[in-house]
Amino acid sequence: MELKGKKVLLTGATGSIGKHLAQALARQGASLAVSDRSVQALNELTVELRRMGGTVLPVPANLQIPQEIEQLADMITSQMEGIDVLINLAEMTSFNLFHQETETGIEDLWRLNVLAPMQLTRLLLPHLLTQGSGRIVNVGSVHGSVGFPGFAAYSASKFALRGFSEALRRELDGTGVGVTYVAPRYVTPLIHTGAVHRMSKALKVHMDPPEQVARKIVRAITRNRHEYFVGFPESLVSRINGLHPCLIDGYVRKRLSVIRDFALGKR
Image (tube, rainbow, N blue to C red):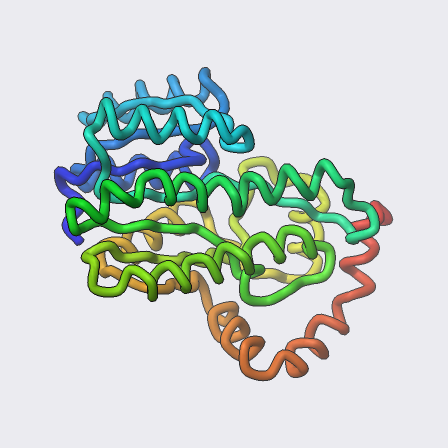
């Protein structure tokens, strides 16, 4: 897909990956609609993108609220007259032993990670089908293929997003509308604190800078990839887990005590 002149809606645009992805899309000549919860952060990103010469429409929205998803879709169809590419990047994570999770926390996570991309896709898909072209891009995680201790709720949401992407891709075969699922591994945070980052260092987890992940997402879009797993050996581990999960069980078991310690705040 050639992105120059294409109309792209990017959710989660002010996050660490989102900022770099918005910049990469602007450099490709895409006309952008960027969305996130923070009005201030969205305005700052818009100013930066326009300085680069990009065409940008900022649309603040809290995607955990169904009415705001509908308002976002209405804004896109009215002010941009539809889109060519929808990138569902907005997400939240949760690192807890599952018995520590709360009812509200699980519901909020699923609303943002699963229901929001599904509902936004549902609302914008008729336009894509009418024009007979376009692409839906769902950004998941390696945790959507490999269930990892401490991330049960998060992994479940990303497994759901991957399943949705796969089923929708097959459903849309022959319509001209494609679906891409991108699965990054651990992304280096802006602030190198927090239990997840400390645990990742202790376990020697591979980390990717957000700008590199953004480039990979653009590559997946322009090459019309169905699935794109960022990083090796995580891409291989994901496939092995799908065929022989018992082989990955042993790998995880060796790290379980460390994971539990960090989840319980003992490290």
